[in-house]
Length: 85
Image (cartoon, rainbow, N blue to C red; front, top):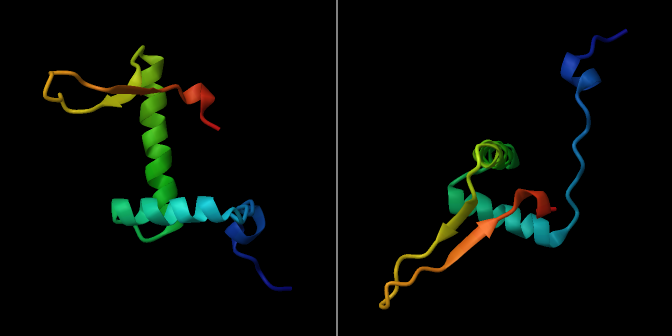
């Protein structure tokens, strides 16, 4: 009887991504962030999401804004994590 490595018997299988748009978006994000593997992208994504959740739990609003335009105006965009699916 052959011995199996623990990760071969206990690690759940990761689902295969079949949506072409998702694959394209992932490749774009890896290129934009200078990453080479899906695992690196997942690590960065989870770390960023964790930071966002922690900030939101402390009462912060997650979002961004543009630089001031010629009139001194800024455009603001916020993210509500509960609606991201």
